[in-house]
Amino acid sequence: MVIVNLQLKVIPDKRQAFLEWFHGLLPDTRNYDGCSEVNACSTAAEPEAVDVISKWKSQEKYDAYLAWREEEGTLAALDEFLTEEPKFRFLTVDQQF
Image 1 (cartoon, rainbow, N blue to C red):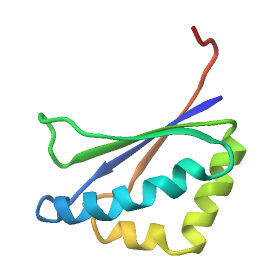
Image 2: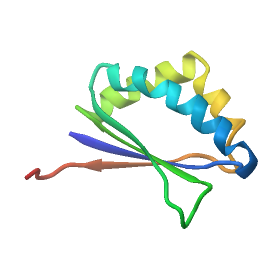
Image 3: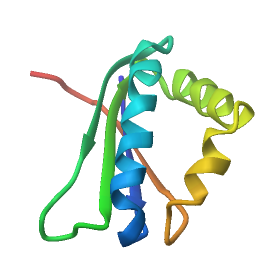
Image 4: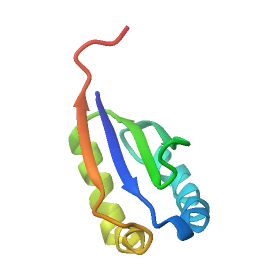
């Protein structure tokens, strides 16, 4: 299993529009082959930050999903909301309790 932490910095005056748009994408993400969980997270201390934490069967499954999102235009649309490039962290689960 791989946990993907997608770290986003949203333009402050576009935050609400971003959240509405982005939350509409999450059901398709969750239903994509290999995804077992997806969460959009925020913190009051850093209101421009949105972290997307998702669990995938493998990084290959996530890579296929990301290629699909790029092909259908989501990644280009995402750029319009961000102040900087997204950051990806891939965490391999070594042990689960």
